[in-house]
Image (cartoon, rainbow, N blue to C red; front, side):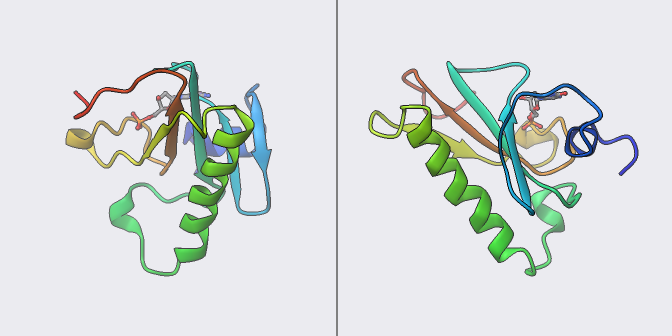
Length: 114
Ligand code: DGP
């Protein structure tokens, strides 16, 4: 996707702090962190929202979640706890239309989110 900011990150067209990469996914720090640790994990294929999943992406979604837990361990927040989540569309708080899993931690997170 030509103008998608996350596709640009995947193509290495922008300077980004990449923490993990494999053939299918990429993880990097959020530009506007909402917690001491705020990492985004994205698929390398452009999928706009969770509503666009077809059922073919089970392994891909598993890869995102598994690596979120690994990064939580790496960042030292696994034991104290953390939150992961996908926002979907406007009411869900989605602003970048390329699916991404948020990994947040390093502080006590409120519930429910605002
Ligand atoms: P959401 O609101 O769920 O769509 O989250 C989008 C997140 O993406 C938001 O927390 C800020 C982050 N973000 C937007 N543009 C960039 C960027 O260019 N670089 C990085 N690292 N993060 C970005």
